[in-house]
Length: 196
Image 1: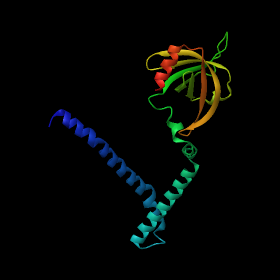
Image 2: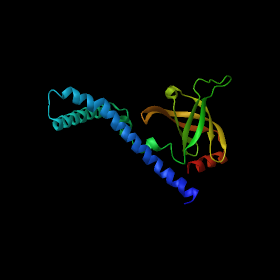
Image 3: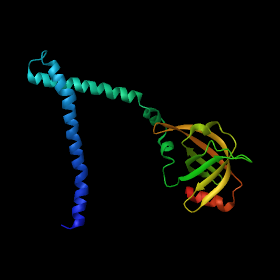
Image 4: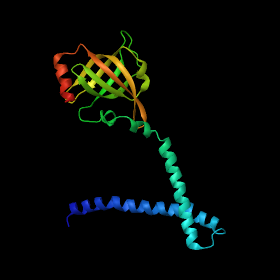
């Protein structure tokens, strides 16, 4: 057996060994913190050993079921699951690219809203940008945009057409619909090629 085969075998066995170890550790923890104290407590009520073990396991199962129900009902993922799957995954594909977006003001540029986000080309002069900050929700006006396309870096000004809040994996983020201002034909083609 060569070193390479031995290394591959070890990398295949290691996760299984970790899983078995963690499972055994979980069983020991459950036994120490739940099963044994319940058996000691209920020993006076149920003298039969087998009935005692069954009663303890049923009580633990009932408690775990209640915990899972509460977590499912109060989980923020329920809101995310209600939204269309396309919207949640739209910014993670190969057509998405990074952008840096900042407010544009003549003279002194304001710096309180800078954001890094992911963008998709929605047309020759339109972008849809997802940013982590919801502070963009109320901003109206022109922004400086730097798009890091695969072939080049495009710097342009853009006008925010509309902004909406979207829940992505339980976090509220802002999606901006932008129209680019005064970009060249070459940049339009580069942008469309990045979105293809």
